[in-house]
Image (cartoon, rainbow, N blue to C red; front, side):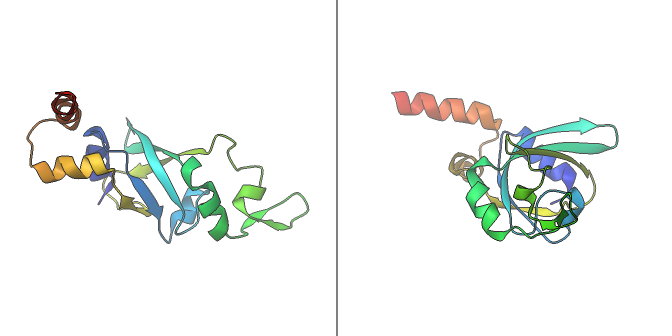
Length: 137
C-alpha cells in the first residue's frame, strides 16, 4: 500500500493500527515491529502528513525498542529514555504519496472490516450511522 492508498483508506474513516517495518528508523522515532494507531492524515504540498498515537502500545513498544539515541554524555538510550520521546504519545511525520511507507496495516477496526465485507457503496461514516440506527430499533 502506497501513501496515496493509505490516505484514501484514512479518508474513508479507517484509523488502523500499523506496525513499523525495517527502514522506519528514517522517521526518527519508531523501531521495527513497534505499533501505533493512525489518527490523522493531511495533504501537504508534495507529500502526506501522518499523525500516530501510540498510547495503547506504550508497554509493548518499550519491550522491543532499541538503544540507538545518544544522551548528554554520549551514552546510548532507548527512545523512551531520550528527550525526544513525546509525553503525549503522539508522533507526526511525512510520507511520499507514491512510495510504500515503512509500516504496514497490522489491524483494522472491527467496524471497518465489517464495512468492507458488506460491499456497501455508501461512505464509511454513512454506513456506520445506518448500522447504529438498525441496532437502536
